[in-house]
Image 1: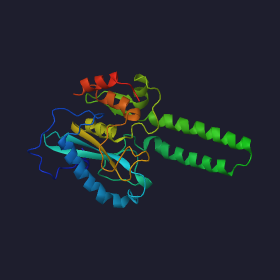
Image 2: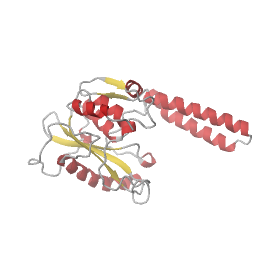
Image 3: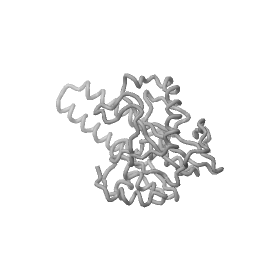
Image 4: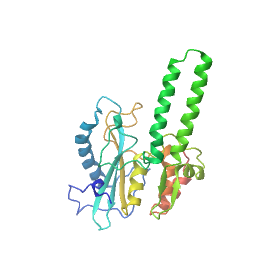
Length: 257
């Protein structure tokens, strides 16, 4: 196990209440233990963000998440990560990484993105409308094919070890094709790592870091539920065999948005 990804609490939690089951990722109730983990993780972000060459006070903020876990030795710690990718292609060795391995198939995603960038340059240099339209359509098709191939390489697991590709998850849930960046949000990444490394999820929380979102719906340090358009089908699958079986059934009865 990559122990460096598990943060040990600096706060004394021996007298804190430990939830009997994972809280609803789509709910508004954040267990105290998750709030403590979030506060500690925010302190880590404040120091680590200096290495990312990204000013969260002047540029767009981002969602981060923490997952309190119980280790095989019965002690507690927490995992942390960022939704999406790091600014300027930076990394942090303490963050739970993407479920997708960039090295897959000889770095096909990096090569594909380079090809798309070159096609974009060709479009800007084109003069004739017919040529521009032809190149634009070719780039669109290339982008779609690359996105589909990417989704085929995102695989999620349940606590019981059942696995599904993200394309199959969305198809089986009747939500159609997954939206761009599905699987890169904090909650799925954190749960995937926990289930894959014999860690028991205890409490989860996601919060906004940096400038408010454009629509002002997300404010700095505010706690927010997992997004429904990207995360709901994935989390419903991942938690179907977990203690949240009743919660996911309730979620399925709610309208999808």
